[in-house]
Amino acid sequence: MTTKKIQSISKQKQDNLLNLCPKLTLPQAELLMGGLLGDANLQTASKTAGTWRARFLQGEKQKGYLFYKYEILRDFVGTEPKHSSNFEKKLPKNIGDFLTSGVIATWFMDDGSAKWKGHSNSVRFSTDCFTQEEISYLQRGLKDYGIDTTLQQKRKNQWTLATSEASKNVLKEVFSDKILPEFYYKVPWMD
Image 1: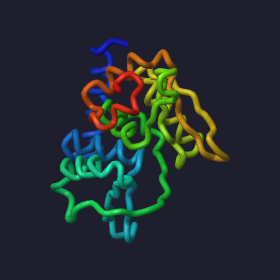
Image 2: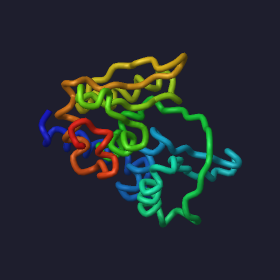
Image 3: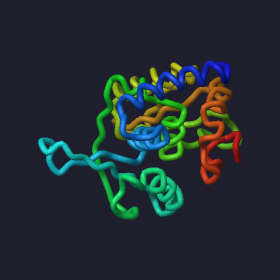
Image 4: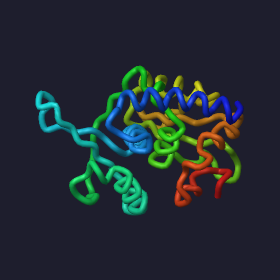
């Protein structure tokens, strides 16, 4: 897939994302959506009150990454980052409509890894907290870019999405200037 085609697909998905999150800039919306696919979650004290908060959960090793996110979302944050724990997520059927290259890169930085470093150009996206049906929505969104994936079972009811070797060049384009240097170790062709 050509750079121009990838940019065209991402532009349409950027428009979808900004329509969904009209009060956010594109980097903020991509960080939020990609984070929700990764280590972030939404919480509310009361669903009837209509107020929600986003929580971005990162390990100690990703402290710099957490503060990178904090800087992008600073206008919406009352306090500096803190530690926390478990949550449950649900994906909408149209999640693929919002998978911009920035969302995919953020999701990868949160929950991605090299499949077999030094032996494969395939990467994995951790999808442990999603059902097989929800993962199929993500697969369709990735397929829009020409990113082929297979579902690999890790444990009972826990799955990982692995990209095909043939998807390397598309992923290079999608990730091009979006992966932060501290995450190059996760990408087989960037380290």
